[in-house]
Length: 324
Image (cartoon, rainbow, N blue to C red; front, side):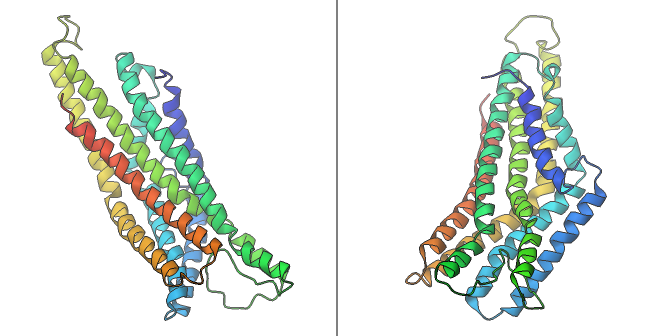
């Protein structure tokens, strides 16, 4: 286990770089950047909702629309939570403090915290790679029909990567290319959907690391007869009680900030997996290889997001229930 605490700040910086692009980083004064970003996103969501109304009654098109608008709804809520939830700033500052060597009493405490920090790094890197692959595949999906049309010498279809209600017909290729490019920022928002999950996992493994250190300090009580304050039973117990209350408040803050978001994601993700499965099974005899691959990729992305929450929650339960 490395003793390089720079990894703590590095994980923090990874989250910051991605979320700062859209003005979502809680510690950043970026009202104008966030406003521009959110107005664009909200405008696209409204047009996607209008598309749902226009296709209402056609089950296939409704499912295709919901597979996008439901995810966009989750992203929109997360953007507001990240930007305007002031309690998050205190938790982030606690994580920053762990990048200081002085915040650990000995090498064992440092190793215990860095063990969970390494888990957070794996979550971020894995989530990033999966998200980048998924959003690029989704964004380039219209090229499948374009390539088929070119190979078969047919008229090129003007299909946009994301569903939205256009109140005019696309007259030519130039207009289509401009509209296609205008939807490119949606790549970032879909990517942020996964990164926000990684950010929450970062917060949870931080709490797990703190709990692991606390358990270690409890085990050390009475192991030494030194008069040092850290080994004096009365002072050590007092410090443990104070630290325990601090960790509990941090965990409760995370719960208060994200409980509605987690409920929303559980319900919507479960619904989307069911709708995607229904969409493929209902036309299983005519579904193409590319459509099946897209379904598998889409379903796996949803499963992985839910799995990430389950794994980090299990880490937290394990630390809370560990016998000391």
